[in-house]
Length: 329
Image (cartoon, rainbow, N blue to C red; front, side):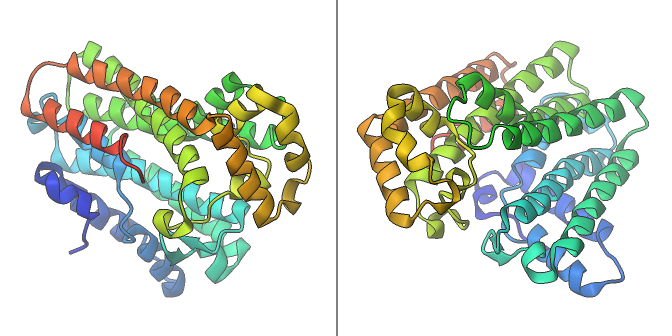
């Protein structure tokens, strides 16, 4: 049996179905090329937090999930993680990342071509799981539109690379797609498959979007405040690739002239340049201000969760969200 991230030890009511999701994903990604299969399996088992299927499962428990087919719920929840994994594999190719969650990436181990095909394979598995879960045309359309929004978010981010005139609204639209969309989909679908009332389903999607926005903002802040060892991934790569996230956008708004000499170096930014950049962000209180903006979205999510009908699953959902979005890393 596969293991889940230790954080789920505190949430036993969804730990077992999360294990079922992982086992189903591994089953679906069994292929003839055993080297690639082992690499994909290692990524699946590498202690990722499984946040998207976890939120799916929690929202499904707010309704009449016991009346729904358990296998359908597991397949649909698993599909959200598979789509997420596909985006990670493709992101690693673009970033030329050697490690993901402390393990060698598909791109690093097998080359770019194999990594592209592996990411595409995960997308096919995503649709296979979705087809196993439902025959609803509306849900299929919702997923295709969500996948489109994820891709558009990534494309918009690339389009705005090295743009020192980037605005907060441009940044927000990008992360609504590339990150928040999958959280929104997971929460919405969980409530849908759990047979919640229509108004709860809609509210769940909004909660998911706020969670996703806050999650990405906090992740972007950590890029400037943590070490690679703490995050299990490289830091400050985004700025060298021209991806200017919330702290830096606030810095450009506060004192553009102070940051331009550094940003004009582009990919040639040295370690000392990056250290100077981080010092400037602290000097202009950009990290603290970015935390304040993320906190607004955290508060919106928690306020909407509080409006849900009182039941044990609601308290778990509130506790998980508050814990997830207020940790240091």
